[in-house]
Image 1 (tube, rainbow, N blue to C red):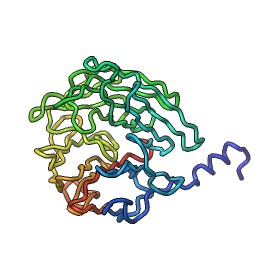
Image 2 (image 1 turned 30 degrees about the horizontal axis):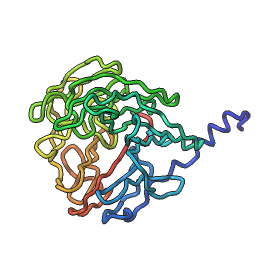
Image 3 (image 1 turned 60 degrees about the vertical axis):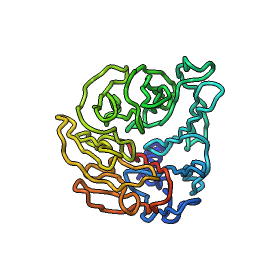
Length: 317
């Protein structure tokens, strides 16, 4: 028998159903289809967009995808949404919504001004939650061909205090900086296209180590590192037609998996769990083992469908 309120609330929370995930069926405004149940997985399907369609983010309260402005990131515990507004005038801003309370808080980001454009700020993109949901990072970099980093913005949750960490000259490719599994550091591509490495920094901007491996840190699903942190994956080879898996301790290659390739829709690469990748397949997006076998198809995407999909981690790491 439960004799105190705290225990009763704890049991209620434990029995409460997880926020609804997108149902099986067609994605509105596209020819793509969700073909597997998404509930109860270690990842969450949070948003999608096309060149002709505004970004749509999954709203569990409405049990529907709703249109939104700006990039949206959903915390691993599914409590917080963070939406980037980098439109001028003014500095870039993040809008945080607490799904439990409904409270909305706007946070102005401490992004440096663009020295070449008066009244403008450096580019700010790719909000990404840490595996434990305690921080959100954003990439800050100079515009142009093969852009180089200026640093990252880190936002503490739930205080929502933001700070800029200067990390210069990293090679910014799709996804940019990604989290280490323990949430105590970040990794990013370093060097130049065709001859690059992966470099790790702590949250003060100090270099911790460098892996001399191919490709960029994977940015989808559970992210670059496995849940244990023992391995990491990069999108590698020309046109990112392969996923390369590496041993974290030694930097040695574990395997290379050939991926399905589409010239019109953005590739999805990251960890699904300790032994499987979330990856593009011939049919769309699915779960792939480390031998390249498709274990399950999650979404079917026609070859001519131009589509950007976002999958994020679910559950605390």
